[in-house]
Length: 159
Image 1 (tube, rainbow, N blue to C red):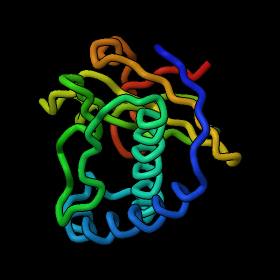
Image 2: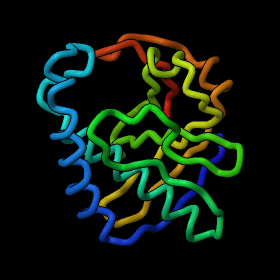
Image 3: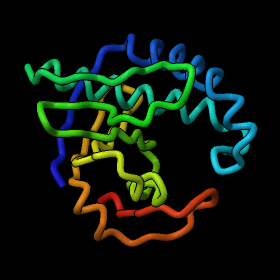
């Protein structure tokens, strides 16, 4: 797993709150109807985290001159495309709390054919720095799977 440490601008914190909140509101109906997507009232917090991870990773790529496509951050329905595309490489971004003991990938989402080649696990810190860990899809296939309250997930201990 490749590790990168980076700094990101403060505006990402605010922008991710706004877009994440709007993302949560736009997906509210589907989350009400489909129990699988419900997270005990933490849906908005998770959407904000997701947007933050995507923006941090995109900012990092831009800062090192890597041309990439950042997928739609806000839509009227859930986006099922990769979060980031670099040439022919497809990347799903996962934002991880700095206190989390594990990297997690939802088993059901991982097994869907979304054409994901890599995962970027973004772990932001309060000082506008973040650790980014990149793992291939095939590597995640080798991780153990267990239930994490809402769903089964592939997991790997963060060292």
